[in-house]
Image 1 (cartoon, rainbow, N blue to C red):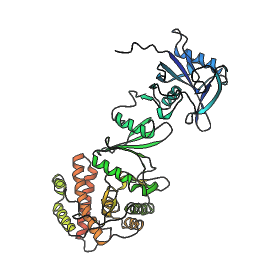
Image 2: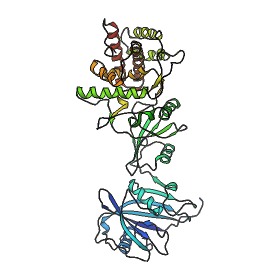
Image 3: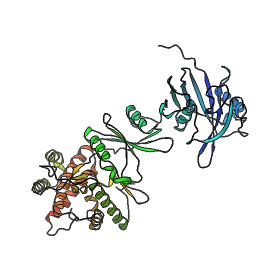
Image 4: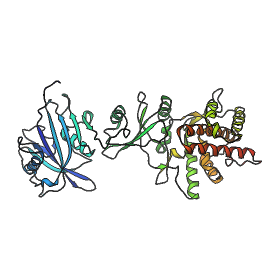
Length: 471
């Protein structure tokens, strides 16, 4: 134990709240004269009059003395408690109370120490303002119950966002394990976008990476992603820093990245995933035309280049994936996939472009105004353009009109070699999906993989081939 016992004074602060023009407003007074923090805005406040006065009685008294309004103790609501240390080193504990009902109109009652009193929007507080008071209001807006605000000797008395010392202490019922990232990720995020007041885990249940929706008191929203490995993190960061900006409003913007934490912070974009949505056939065709245009933007975001020597179908993991998927394959599936991959090795190479790598309906958002945005670039890397059509092919299966709409948006049909490669890559992805679905208990992926193999085999056995419709 060091430093001796704490003997901090106690003070009370009035958060008088009213409904303003479209926003909540709070009453503030400006300190004046020979007082601490003269010239700065502050909440009506004061100290307890000795050990015989409780905090609620003190609040009612100070409110009457400073503003002239009468508050019924029954209308006092606890807001937040702040343990504060000033730049001079003295500490105190402040009790902040919310009051929404009172009698009388606030007015300046102590002109020798107050030269201004007014209502201000909670989301547009004035400057200059006492940092301690601002900390209490920020904690209040964050629905905190306890906060620490220990300033350093070089800090100013007035609030300065660059030296904001507020630290909100989580309560037992709002921050249970798993609802927010670790402290290092929280601190990194708040250095990038300011204090976060609400974390919502929006990760896919079966995905290795973790994603949170992070919000602050002013309505700002960001997404924070902690990648499962350095490879995915590197791909995501590279995409955001190189070709994703070419998509403009059709993709999020990278705010910050930390290679040590494998974490990115990106802006929020409007819309909900297309996966599982229901549209009329006409709406579906319009959406698929937009998807095709979005794919074209991705593939034209950087100049195409020749494929590297030795590139071809990504068959390297086939044996491992087959070993796990084999019990779930239909008779003849394995032989079909092997023959298809071998045929793919004989195809001439295709140009490489930037690809999303996981271009499917789950990662395409549809906003209320009909616009589309694409998210999640952790599998992005250069490759053949058809790589981005593999997981979409299940969505247009049996719907040649959707395939035609997509190609119309893309601006050109696939070549014969691209269609062959699409079939090969779809078969490899199907086996990989079955393997992953079995290992992680995701029956949807298993069924999608089996469905893809059935479709590919039926197309291969058909005497006629319709572009797009066969895959």
